Length: 163
Image 1 (cartoon, rainbow, N blue to C red):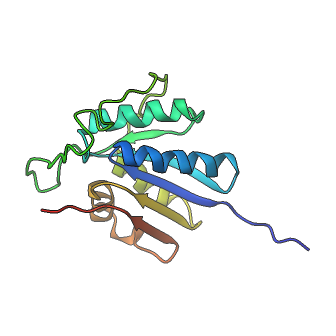
Image 2: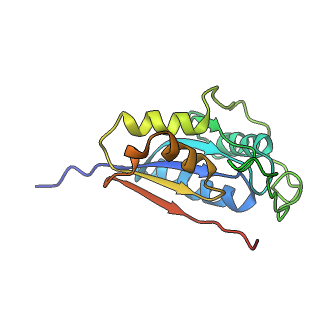
């Protein structure tokens, strides 16, 4: 008898730079192979400002054929109120000034951390947050609802800063 295998539920929290688009391409492949369920994507500042990061993610979703994945824009700077350290590693647009075809995908109106809170509050299923930029959206989520820190939530964070 085969076990009923539940797809892993994933939230992608990203700063929308060139390296993050490679991660999104891998996630898109896993979605299409039905190995993960991408619940949504949240954006923040990092390699570029949050508005550009969000546009990059929306355009990439169109490019990889996943226009139905919802995108939620988050913070454009640290919670401390200090100016954001935009690393410029990938140029002004976060893509080394490359461009993607403009897609019809647009971000949702709900703020990223609010959407993450509501999504995690509404499920007891295991969820993985994959973070590839500053963890501001994740920190805000936990600041608003510390009870979300639970056994069936994994956070994989790939990022850092030299300063």
